[in-house]
Length: 184
Image (cartoon, rainbow, N blue to C red; front, side, top):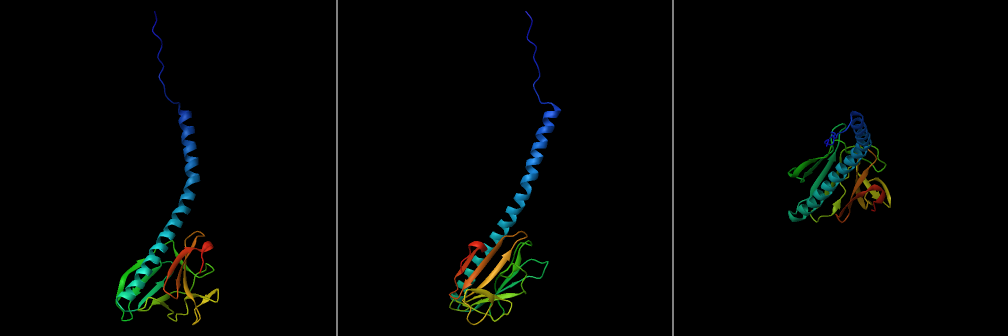
């Protein structure tokens, strides 16, 4: 009796090329979405970190009975930097440097005049620094700060269209949110 012929299993070159082509097409479609997602996450992470550090700066102002002045600066194309100092010029916290893709913006998303600054007094409440570059909420309208301002706003945008805002209320409470869902 004859033994059955054994065939070798495997893939042809054509089948392998088709699989590689499909993987390439799927990867090419996924990369732009990943880049957009990554930029939004960097912005969200940096804004969240800054909001948390602002809350700590507020608590430090109360605990040490000394005001804390926060300065947010950006000179394009450099990254946004945030410094925390006392009125005597003592550095209260290490400088925060945000991701290079993040820009400090005004309420409309355009580049504002830098630097912006805010101040927590020794009671932990927000006090306007009188800096004409600051953006505040005045009777429901976002604009330049005035004695009647009810909050100060810091806007940050990434390379895409994502825009996050940090709002510092007169009480010193800090809110951060994605602009379309932001409430003052």
